[in-house]
Length: 133
Image 1 (spheres, rainbow, N blue to C red):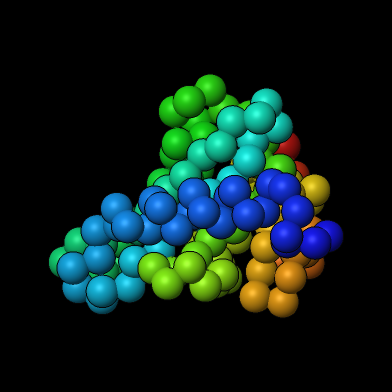
Image 2: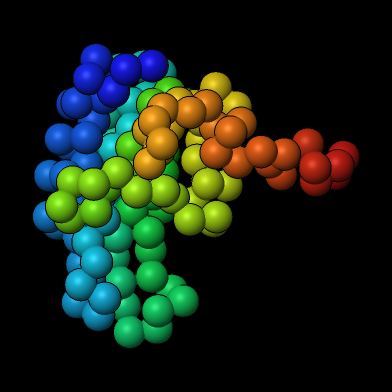
């Protein structure tokens, strides 16, 4: 998949824009994320730090919250960038969030190009792994 074709340039621009609203007073590392939803909406998120670093919210957390706060659905395309607009990889926790919000078919713009979520998080832990309740 060519990142010069829609929806990638638009998503990257939205991610860069939202990274400017990040709250990163401790690390100075602003991050923005943007994704396309299966109903055509675009959702965004930025990182929000606090003095207890372990409680910092990644941009992907805000994005998934935005997804659910605006009606839910499934993510279809996702990108995450630093403040300079460079594509970066989601951390492990966020890969799990993205898997549950988009599933195996979610396309992720990574540092090596666009990959399906199955390549970003191989052998993912899914709700099926919880067994029957």
